[in-house]
Image (cartoon, rainbow, N blue to C red; front, side, top):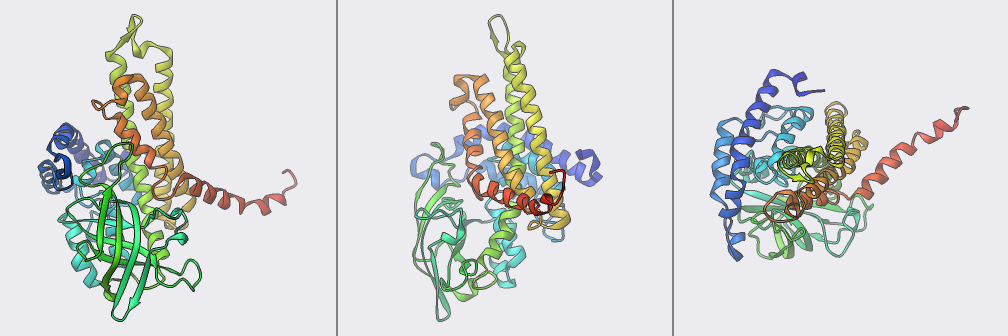
Amino acid sequence: MNITDLSPKVQELARVLSDFVENECLPVEKLYEKQLGVGEMRWKTIPPIIEELKLKARKLGLWNLFIPKGHSEGPGLTNLEYAYVCEIMGRSAHLAPEACNCAAPDTGNMEVFLKYGNKEQNEKWLKPLLEGKIRSAFAMTEPKVASSDATNIETSIKRHGDHYIVNGHKWWISGSGDPRCKVFLVMGKSDTTLAKHKQQTIIIVPADTPGVKVVRPLTVFGYDHAPHGHCEVTFDNVKVPKENLILGEGRGFEVIQGRLGPGRIHHCMRAIGFAERALDSILSRSIQRKTFGKNIAEHGTVMHDIAISRMEIEQGRLLVLKAADMIDKIGAKKAMKEIAMAKVAVPRICLRVIDRAIQIHGAAGVGPDSLLADLYANARTLRIVDGPDAVHLMQIAQIELRRAPELQKRANL
């Protein structure tokens, strides 16, 4: 399927978004970096340019595009339609998603509120998130356990009268360094005597609650991603009212499955966008530089890299589009295999394309003057976030193996 197969409305939206990304976001990426604070101020300074971009995006109707069809708060896109526009935003991965209020982890958290939040919770937290007035964080991963298996989570969420007390140690909590981060969705265990998938609970913790401490920002291959950040956070006897429970005690797995399925595919959609940008950098570089008396583009190895990159990106895009289409048709739970395949394959494809771009740029590819090192750090991280490759490969294999008994009955196998 091509974008020309979609409705005129979506095609026009994609055109407007593409113009916004190419002519408004990409040209100010360096300015955004310059407007960041220095030292401790990096975690207190919001570059003014991002707020300017948000105003422009909203006026253009490029706002909350991620919200699933069926919710009046968004433009009513299907997951398949959003895949096309999300890829466009991925071309300016640090600016365009936030400018359009489509940045993680806020998107996933807003979907949690949309699907599972009650009226009071949504008025207090969802509404300002939809307006882009605040930001949020999702606190699941922990340093002392393998959090790819969420049954290992050790944070406790214990009932005390009309309140719950939260105690835990989290890390790699994206968005928690941002001064606009006003709320955490925290995953912990409320009852360890129950079946292992019924022990977990999600609770809302306002960021200014006593006992919440952002310990330090963590860097990704040296990038701190300020002011957003990926931080280590502790919850020390944090007291929150019982009304802050999401859905109810013991329903944490239900909530995170509803959150992570779409989130995983959103990552892949954006990743196709920055893979395309890496390929663009290969093409531009290869006709600007000469080695051994001819343009880099004329060397067979570079031509090979260009061709392989184009084929791999197309393959990755098709996986993403199929997964998005399956979510629309049968739901994220039944599309688990398609989501998992995209989640494994697309970051690997992006890494290979970016690595080729780095090689063609030489020393410039690993330095601060090109975007490639930053893109590589982001793409490598995608092989871990929302479940590492090994977990998704296991899921894919398990689903495939369900077909084995029936295959055994066939005489020709």
